[in-house]
Amino acid sequence: MGFSKDFVWGTATAAYQIEGAAYEDGRGLSVWDMMCRKQGAIYKGQDGSVACDHYHLFKTDVAIMKQIGVKAYRLSISWPRLIPTGTGQINQKAVEFYNNLINELLAAEITPYITLFHWDYPLELYCRGGWLNPESSDWFAQYTSVVMEYFSDRVKNWITLNEPQCFIGLGHCEGIHAPGDKLPLEEVLRAGHNAMLAHGKAVQVIRAEAKTKTNIGYAPVGDVRVPLTMDAKDVNAARISMFKVTEHGAESKVWNNTWWFDPIFLGKYPDDGVELYGSKMPKINSKDMDIISTPVDFCGANIYHARLVKQNDNGQIQEVDFGQGYPYTFYGWPVIPQSMYWGPKFYYERYKKPIMITENGMVNSDWISIDGKVHDPQRIDFLGRYLKELKLAADEVPVHGYFLWSLLDNFEWTMGYNQRFGLVYTDYNTQKRTLKDSAYWYSRIIAENGESL
Image 1: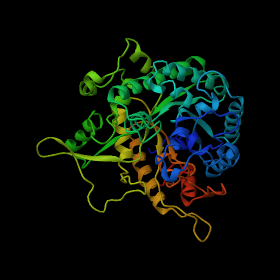
Image 2 (image 1 turned 90 degrees about the vertical axis):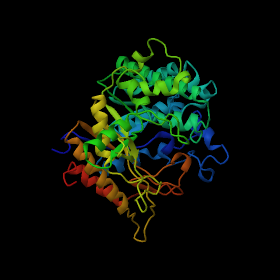
Image 3 (image 1 turned 180 degrees about the horizontal axis):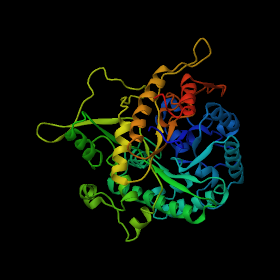
């Protein structure tokens, strides 16, 4: 059957990565502005103060999306642009910007999917304790209410949080993402729990205050496991491994699926995680899990790669090395198209919610060729392989949409402008946009609804 006739073909960005205008029109600072001032934190000391200058060039970017033929655009709202100090006074210049952007999208027949939080936490609230503050979930609910007041008359698709494994794990445990903290595990788990509460309260606000019909989801990292073979033993090993909480040594101690999925979709933290974290667990009030598990409409997942596992001769689950010469993207991530089959399949089996691929794409070493074009055959091959697997998954479980990361080459967090994910090449000196070959390829895939994959 392939993709349904109403399958959502989209692309995605995040506010801090593309907007720029960091010091214009009353925008407040975020923890990423702070992180970019930290010596050695960002590649070559780069920052997002200008980025792709989308704040001024949004009409150009919407026109490019229309040219490509995308049906939906996943954007994020900058919390400190809208409410400069995180709470209190609203920045009407920001309201005007996002209203204009939404209206431009709708005029181009592109459906907006708005992410409330894609990592640009207001600096003023961080100075009040950030996600560690017990009031932080209420701050987020108040911010969500402002978003509903101004934009929910035209927007019905909402995503609460993007990748808590990153902004909590990498940001508060490992210190390599903003705000750059290396907290003890007790505080990391407390910050994570407050973020989960923020998600739940935001869902409740959207349900209560939205001015039109709502479609609500959530976009954590999709930490996928792929079985080495189709043998039932390997498949079950992959399933068990994917939904197991373990400590990964040098990796983030909260890098897993179930700590971030189970509370929302099953109403409880996973038993193995509770046992593992033990006395380091945050204090949980009696109604916390009811708030966190407020029903949502779809399960989002950002899937780029996976781990390969099997059941060994002793009946144990074993991670399999990819071996010498295995293909990796320019970012250093393994190319594992099967992640796009097993990820949605396993998530649906466990959580029984329609699946949205809220991010997928690859970094390539792109440049403008002598003919003035950007030829990126590796990206086309990558996307074709991954989408073919997603098409197989869509035959078995409800997969409602796919958002390609990213529309534009942009500020790639700690990697600065050294990594290019975009369908569109950005010249950061001139802000000229050049559609890559992959953009024209994706346009054809959208037009045919993936039939040739």
